[in-house]
Length: 279
Image 1 (cartoon, rainbow, N blue to C red):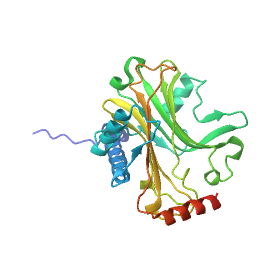
Image 2 (spheres, helix red, strand yellow):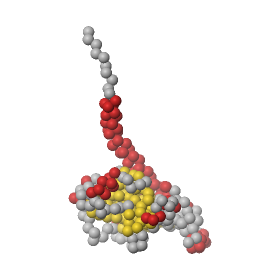
Image 3 (cartoon, one colour):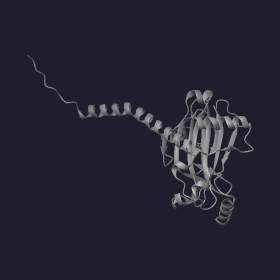
Image 4 (cartoon, rainbow, N blue to C red):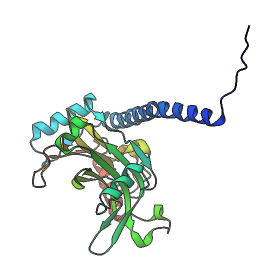
């Protein structure tokens, strides 16, 4: 009987097998991360809406549509769009590819009349599904936050007040064309002197009935106030499907506010007075 000696695989073969296994597992890991991100954002939104009677602002029109959108949020009939890439620096592979293709699109810097502003944190990219992007083909959404003067970089950037809180920017990759932009609100922009926890504010991309929205939900606080006295500002900016993008087209924007009713008139007057003295 002929016996054959088993030869162990070479190091190169083993490395190839490991690399192949990693490639197979990576999409599943990314899917799990996206699901966890969306679940967490949905929980925060549910927590912030719970027991808070948000009212449409006067400029919110048509009123029936604003109320319908708010009802969809309360019912959980939406989907959070999770980022495909995240980093604390703008070195995201898809953004670097965009920069090589579209050299004029610098989404990390904003030029103003007086300053050149630079984003410093919370960078992310999002990919839209073909049915959302429509005829525009590949659409990438870039997220960047905490824009400060470029000459202040490296000087404790986190401690510098933001000249602009942040932005979502949607880009048609094949056309190197900016399709839409919207503001990302920072947690403490309207919350002077108050620490705001991660689950006390929200700025995300949502799909509601197949349409894309930017949602910002942030506290509005005058001075040092207990949390039961915090007001909240909720905004929904519609980007639609982006398939019919037109720079001249009006995009619906809904504003809501919540003002607690638990404060007495005296407490409320004191809160406003302290807010004025606190700047």
